[in-house]
Image (tube, rainbow, N blue to C red):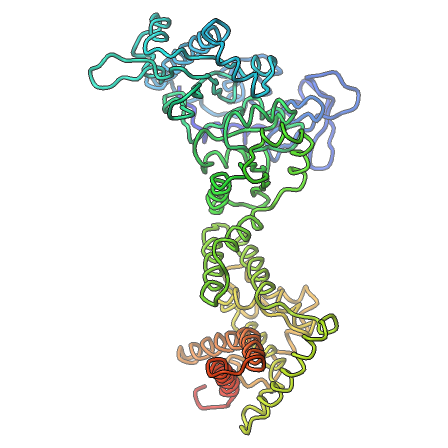
Length: 622
């Protein structure tokens, strides 16, 4: 019969786990969970917890973990289908009728499991025999112990086109082909896929062999060869060593992800048993989702060479559309040219442990990669960095998470290229330069133009006008997220209000003025907001009370002017910084190009001031 994941999820949701377990174990309420003495090992102090909301139990003593079905199979001793039928009867759910085709597929998979088990036994026999001497010597040179060899089931495939085919002939050639053990090309006789290779079994979460990885011994390509996809094995969905790492992670609360199976084996031997590896490909979306079911922030430990770092970045980028609250990726950077096995053999397990104790977060990895992607020695290259970061943010589906990344990257960018300097800590030569610039700045603002004289006191007033406009037109906040998160206001009350406006716009897609004011009533920002709405001196078009209903051209004019004001005030620091740099260059080396650039920036700054003045003029448009 076919039991879909949706049907099984419904069955679990209809089963109250604490009630089910409470029939045979004494349970006690503990906050939002229940606790009990673990039925799977002897203990006097309860370490067994039951979470009805999430539908699982977990013992912090022995690591036992599962859902309602697992409880019935592990504690009650029932078979899977018997457990499902008993739970379905209590939940008043009908078990789906048998599907002949599904039964046939299940029988086929069971048969293939037998074939793979027989192949594993044969490979191990060859490894321990005369033919396996080279394979045993290879593992000895890599420091792999006898205990590890047994636990991970190393085997050997002789360099022959037909030995395995002959040895497992009783399984049938067609089944050997279907299991990926033989290669069949057109009408030619099938032949052994793995030849002259150290064999590493790949197991499913239940510990059954479903595929093999083979490492060449001696010369030849490819260096590593995996089984093809079969009814048992999907390379993009399978993680090597998951059967051992899953119970280990319950003890550590951690999962390590490395590039390949030899890295995973070396780490497990060194005591890091909570380790998995993809199988010759970059970490896939399915594998990321699978790992997140065990831990919220797995640690990726890829090699220190260029290929390893590129693989880490591919995993980072691939995770962005999948990100969800509290779920992310962490990274460690290994020394250049080393893999985990190299590091452990050179410096011991403690060196690797020190790295994973201080992992790098996803945002840091993306920033570092893009920052180092090209020399940032021109305005164009700096703009390129900003665009690449923005592209990554757009790939994040969860908008709350996307906004946090957007703000984080913007703050890094601002701090990197437009830092705020503390003049009290500057060295004397920079103080002298700034003194010269300040003199030049005063001369610029004293130019014989009446409008430019008015501008010098506008910054705080502009900020108040923008905040008042955003309160009147909350729909515009989300349209200017990027610019608004760059604004840093000297007035702490205004800055708190701005942060609250952005925060509320992130939480709610649609807001009107009254709804926003109702929310602000619960904060310390309410009186400031009401004061801005009553500020009659703020003559921007977007601060004026709209008629009801307002003509579309009036609304469009207000929105356009609000956007323009935000653009002008956020662009001013960059423009002034560029003008300061141009002025410094003129003072250091006065030539035609530097003087022309300084004058161009002065003109641009003047035009910005004039536009702000225009925005405040009372006119007949509204």
